[in-house]
Amino acid sequence: MGYTLELRAGSVDGVVAELREPTLSGADVADQRGDDDLLDEVVGRWSEFAHAAAQAARAGGGALDAGMASYVVAVVHGTTHWYGALGHSSSGGEDFRAFLAGPVVQALGGDLVRHLLNRELAGMSSGEYPSVGWVSNAELRAAVAGGLPDDAGDLGTQDEDGLLQLVAAVRRAAAGGLDLFGVYG
Image (tube, rainbow, N blue to C red; front, top):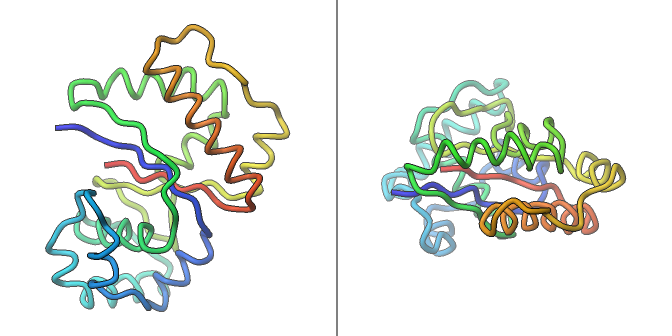
């Protein structure tokens, strides 16, 4: 079993608006989901999850269980664009966390990395997998203005590729006026 940190770009305001006033249907998301691991149950119970998420978003949010977290991820998938992904095996989780806490924090900053991994969205947050985080375009532009590395040094091929992919996603989203989402699961 493996885990993936998906990088997606779009509008936080647009995602929050969709959570508060759902327009997507289960069929819309089922057609767009590709090979991600969205639970079939979420698509089958779409209206129930949409109603619950809308109520939670209007009431200020709250903690998400695994089903609601998967619904939120489906909304993010349905309202954003793919920017890439970094993955690791289940046995590689400790190394991946060390990579994020070390070289990625040094390159992008601690707040940006924390926000990308898990951040409240419409007041909702998840301690379950999958988790969603996001970084605003203003935060991305500040990171770019603060200086991002052009190379990854001597981290090793996989970590070098991962760091350069993250830096490229930050630059691209910042330049495009987009917010950057992280979906980890």
